[in-house]
Image (tube, rainbow over all chains, first blue to last red; front, side, top):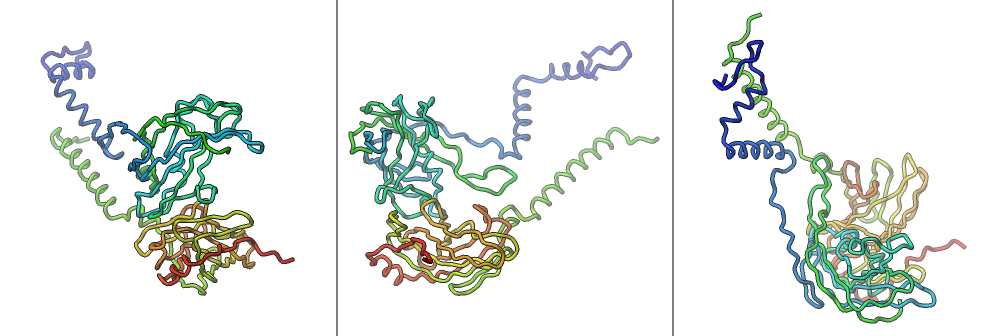
Length: 220
Length: 192
């Protein structure tokens, strides 16, 4: 028992008083170290304290090849596609060459969908809706097509380079934008959780960003 | 009731904690990890051989390839090669079929069949064989020596059995497929 802790009326020491007295004897540094060790011990089953990635965004430019894991990306052009008689929906398309950096497995189509986002255009249409997207920077392309056959892209196999078009639908009557901001987002390959042995590409993070002029393309 | 002295009690507590941690460590080291426990049961066959699986039998009838496939008016081109596999699937107990394809290359990589690939393999009733057309595009160097896994579960290769078929693809076959000028027609044949 500490000499500073007065006995209670019943003659026994109050546990809270004991703890308080003990803490008085511990320096602030020791207290911080102890808290850190306890937190570290509790975090061990979940992977411990991993170093977090600094969120630095590098420039993204037309014609420059950049590795945005798991994709090697080269933005070719950005185009506005005017509405036609049969398709009243104006569109913006980003054309880019992609090659998988993962030689061990195909990159799922969903990763390609999460790869690019555009911003700086107010009239992007929300997915599966006729409304304007509330958060354009978070809105995925409505489709990704392979330019050689204009059909939808699927998983990207290793060792193949495809020229793809990410197409965003705009609200009817939208004017052609003159420029937009394009963000390429990286992924991390990791286990989905601690109970399942399922590895996937997760943790979509902005990696490269640039401003692009929008060319006037042929009608959509 | 006699009680242990305070020192002995603390020692016993520490010993119990250390023993529990040691047992936990041994258990985690001795037990197989997730990859081992979830590995599929593989039945390896070649083209023309029947693989008998838990849910049914499958047999690859033919393997072909080209730079382009066509179904009705839709053409699909690849910078690699399309591998086109014709197979039969016959369920044993329940209505079922092949739900997932994986091409496993000689180098050990796994090519999954995404939305551009075709898995025209309808479910059929037990004992009724159904003909399947399966396509997957791949870099030419990855096609040589590749095996095709035919899997019953959708997008999950764990725990169940699977047929892994040696497609018998050689460099000579790849050269012939690349030289082909006409697309492979995948349009379903009608009986009329």
